[in-house]
Length: 345
Image (cartoon, rainbow, N blue to C red):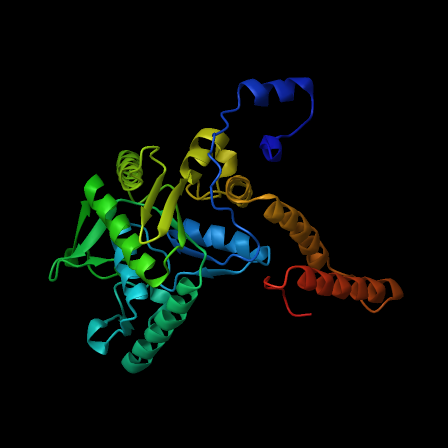
């Protein structure tokens, strides 16, 4: 796979530009290859949701962390330690704010006006998430910021402030060693639940505009150094614990150094565009997949195009025939790849 995805022409001048002037990131292929049968578990910043969406849209088995977006490595460690431990949440761990019960490790989408219902819902999510994490072949984590918010009254780090007063928290920058230690503890906790799971860590390319430009750069640098310290073997791109293995994938570097243009950003100029996410995932698959997954992805794209086709006259002879061929293609795909998650007929 080459940089053809970003090309906009086939002239000799264009080919020369991409050959001599395009800063393509060199990525060492992963030793452990992802196959269509492998279940991926995504967690971390909002960029993890982008990656999860790409995987799900191609019918591949995947799960998303039940906590919502988690941006800093210390909160990520707290969340996955709780998830892996099997511990249940008690109602005394919730707090009431703006007529809703909340938990500091979960986002506001799981808030509730009923305390008991909220406790039950969170524990159900934890149980389901734990079973999915236990069955995962790969854990894909994206780190977004090294800034954390600590609750003044307890000193606990929170994943979500839930619009509480700023005076309830103190904001500080993690050290490189704190980032390293958080990742080590996370890997140990997950490895005890699922020995042998492969962990893929990526630095989110999303710019945190709540930080100014200088703070955002500092934060990303601390995270990158923390990841590098965590991946501590001689080659500097792998770590092992409890039979698990961790590697780094350069999403951040691909967007900033390879694409390097505002055309690859969404309208807010902070998040990568849909095309950028697709390109990053192409590089991800190129790095993490073998020939089997590459063949699968090509066939999945053809099926997606078939499923996304909208008939103007579905009851016409041509429409009926098209529907029959589509159903036949779905059955054939399911028989060839039994582990995939296909839409209902």
